[in-house]
Length: 471
Image (cartoon, rainbow, N blue to C red; front, side):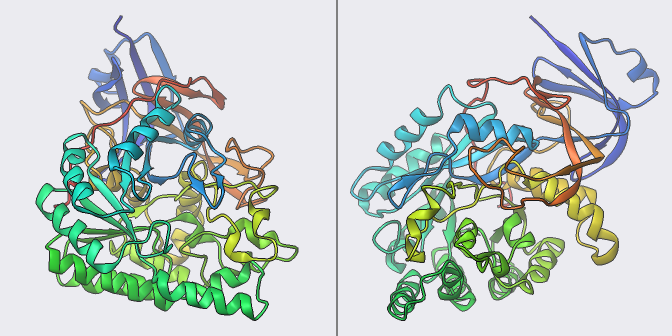
């Protein structure tokens, strides 16, 4: 049966435009937009009318970097695809791209099938996959071609974590050469893992075991060096490069230098690097373990460079790298040895709100980001980067009706007591922010209605992605 929803009276904000418009949704897609109060809009009828007066009408967020149910260090991320996608919806995100993992010695296909099985029938919102390649060889290089055709068009490699995910420069070069031929996008975790392991060993030998030392051994220069090396390898291979979770000013400078040469090099940062710092890692009584992630949190002065990168488009995307581990029983595995603390932070529910809060509070003072840039870095750019635009990331006729009614004036306090992520702490505990999701539609279906969850596991569909649309 055909269903029509009319969203009336809101300010429609996309990466390109802002307008007071009504939005007509039919059969899960956006059918039309018309100026509020116009003859066209006045003639529309619908089964359901949503009043967006005083609210923004924005595209659903696209979080291009999540790790649901990721095995790490003898445990697994605490959010399942069910709990994690539900939390994402609460935060105004209607699409995630998660990482399927190839185990060393296994085929890419085996890892991908495992992730299909984890997600199938469990997601409240739409989802896609990137492929982590941790064992580059003739067989896996051939498999990459087939995955691009299957809609898995991006491949993550690691310069960090020797013995787990690590690839050497030769393996990275070969994967990049393959991607340059099949249209895939190489995503890089850029840290010099070999050098970092030496520094970890030396720190532990000196008795430096607290969480703050996690940040001290993973030096900014080792992020910058790996970023530089990744750029040069991509140049040699003639391949595009997307550097994930950029956290340091020196790494941003490497990306900016590459982009100034006109190279197809892109960068992502995350809310934790924009809002948290080494001060959090240094919190007493092992509380700093809550903030252990890699790349690590940096001293506060790096934040200005990240915001500047987002303003100048040297960084194009804000994703979360959502990879939650409970403080009790999981983060605690690293008591007495910071290198055993599972790496990752919860954040899939907070991204849209934190970026809006910055827009509201900082824009006048620091000129951080505009409303349209907010939508660009959180919705449109990730959709374009990973081959989903204009199906996702915008409000336009023909696009999926992934729509958020956002109240820019509502106040909330972020807290583990009220969030919906399956984790026992909030990285932003007690932070008071302005702006809140009111209503969320995923392909025209109500998932959040006026602050109530109305979605269901299994509504979310797998997304077959095309290749990067910036190339």
